[in-house]
Amino acid sequence: MDTDVSSVVVIGAGLAGAHAVECLRAEGYSGSLTLVGAESDPPYERPQLSKEFLKDQTEFGLVHDADWYAEHGVRLLTGVTATAVDAGSRTVTLDTGETLSYDALLITTGARPRVPAIPGVESARLLRTIADARRLKDALTSGARVALVGGGWIGLEVAAAARARDAEAVVLEMAPLPLGQVLGADLAAYLRDLHVGHGVDIRTGVTVEAIEPDGVVTSEGRVPADVVVLAVGAVPAAELAQEAGLEVDQRTGGVVVDSRLRTSDPHVYAAGDVALATHTTLGPLRVEHWDNAIRQGELAARSILGHDVAYDWMPYFYTDQFEFSMEYVGHSSPEDEVVVRGDRDGHEFIAYWLRATAQGTRLTAAMNVGIWDVNDRLRQLVGTIVDPDQLTDLR
Ligand SMILES: Cc1cc2nc3c(=O)[nH]c(=O)nc-3n(C[C@H](O)[C@H](O)[C@H](O)COP(=O)(O)OP(=O)(O)OC[C@H]3O[C@@H](n4cnc5c(N)ncnc54)[C@H](O)[C@@H]3O)c2cc1C
Image 1 (cartoon, rainbow, N blue to C red):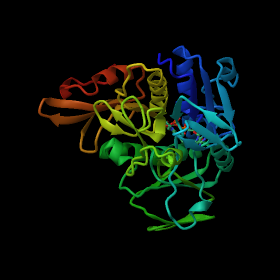
Image 2: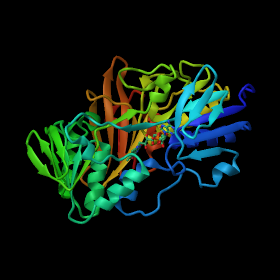
Image 3: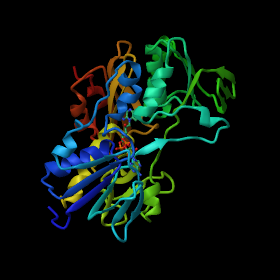
Image 4: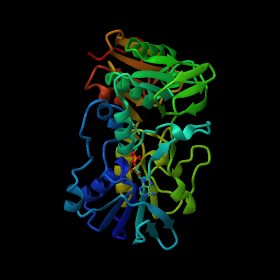
């Protein structure tokens, strides 16, 4: 352990921050530890906000019980925003007026929904926090007309939750298929058809021109709506880092960190959605997924303690929408060939993403749908040369 570190401050009490403090204590760090969070709740499992919590669940899952922090000597500040970082004096200013000193600072401020410059956009709802989810849930009443601007993961999950609550759902997507770039045309069409079969109105090739209190004006006409939800991606919450003079990538907006999650300042680290991290084989990568936030939180903790660690795992994510429950591991590109093994119509199959290389056919990603306890095996296969004829649904 690096004995020079006796005070650690973590800004951002989300998934990455909560797992970082847990890992610091688990690794034996006994110095002062403060976790600063702008939200009023202790760190919670964000993915449930567009799934079970939005559908019917009344409770939401915390990363640790509320008592855990005090029990482990973590000073958790909720409802408190860090307003400035002074990298020279190694201090963080809070909106309470307090100043915190650090030997090591970890920035886990996450991301916030992208808000495009569309007339009337301020009347649309966003979904990032438990407070957003509570408000949205109240609006998803039987018969309510819900328009989702954007047919990405969150837009489609909210559409599924809306249908589960007997609301009408229309998805407005600019691309020819929702998630076509991620899933490939064939599987994206499968997912679209699944939604349509559950009564979701999916409109593709549509540009949103204005948002009004009772509808959306699109390139294909006006769509009446009681609730309009904006789900067109997220942007890193990197302002603090930028203002502190840390390197921030202009293209992705992410805080630039190396494979040990160190920023351009040797005392400052970043992890989770906010970080553009150098992957050991994939290069600079900014990943907005649950698993990445957890692993990077832990990696940053070990890195702070001087362990020899690196960002070297394949991205992983999951979703649940109607019968489409899946886990995806890897990093594919839209040019990769996709092959499916198993029962697609029964929603139990494995999709493999394949790329022709000089060495042979490389598996770039795999997705298990409705087949469980196989993702670790898929993780081992991803990145290797495979014989496509030998790929099965692993059952
Ligand atoms: C609705 C929704 C559904 C999702 N579903 C999935 C899914 O199914 N599968 C999946 O893999 N991923 C999913 N994700 C993504 C996943 O939740 C994120 O990748 C993950 O939460 C990122 O963790 P993080 O700790 O980096 O950031 P966050 O969890 O966003 O936490 C950052 C925290 O920092 C706080 N903060 C920011 N600035 C400051 C400041 N200056 N001072 C104090 N606090 C600050 C924020 O308020 C926030 O609480 C979903 C995300 C959303 C929004």
